[in-house]
Image (cartoon, rainbow, N blue to C red; front, side):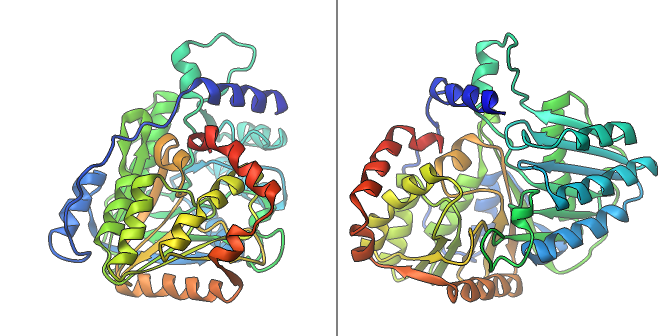
Length: 418
């Protein structure tokens, strides 16, 4: 794995910078007005669909049991896409659940990112192969093999999506990884704070469509028929959409989703994100929101799992604090939730971070929910997290150590790759 990581660092240097089309003018809209919905659907290339049911899942205590129950109930197909998969008790439990369904005749397609899944123990792929599951790798890094310059550039584009779809009818997405770090309740050290979602109804078709897009790219195979795309009945009253980003296809839906929602906010913006260093356009949008009377609150972890990304993130806090954005640092554990609530009526949960890599390089996926009850529940969890967080002041930020400031300077040349 060390050789792979070294190669990946070289690729970062060769791959160039992120390239989001510059945004000049933005429409003048109010979130929730009639024109807002078709505008955001058009710019994210994702229809807003009625009739779904969406359930919030908090931390590994809720996420993994719900997923395992669904996996064990599969009858026709399981599609699974994951960025991070490493050894541990939960990894083996999920692996065995997949294998058991494969042995029962269920079609199981597993797509792992070749960088994030690089630490998977060998016995798990062996188990899946023996049981009849199909494991594929997204942009497999070919160590010691000839690659074309185009392939070399592509290695920098990682699949950061998290998708689980059962029989084309039940779906899960969010930002969790398969590791014992995600077990527990998110309130103790070494057990990360995470928010994911379980969905039923017509929106599952969009979630499945995102998986088959990535699967087709990785394998050349086109998945279809009733096992993957059955007729879906109305399961609830929620309007929702699945917004994808795939820079290799020049799709920056997640970036535009965030930007449009921020510029349309009128009352409040609550952001939970572990890697918070947006580009200048989103930075400006958040500060302008404060100027027009919007309360903007950002929740990030006190300590990150990556020192470099933590330094890059902290380096940019000053402008937000001076601009009136409230920043809180979650104390008990690494806060890994990637969610946003706007005006108490619009909410998103997904895989995208508010950083250059998520918004311009990785393949990402977010569920967007247009439902006041869902938004209220998510905002309530946000407020609960604030009880375990410390508010950051400009004075405290500005008094950070000289060593920290030096480390931040070293992140400037590589900020667009973090």
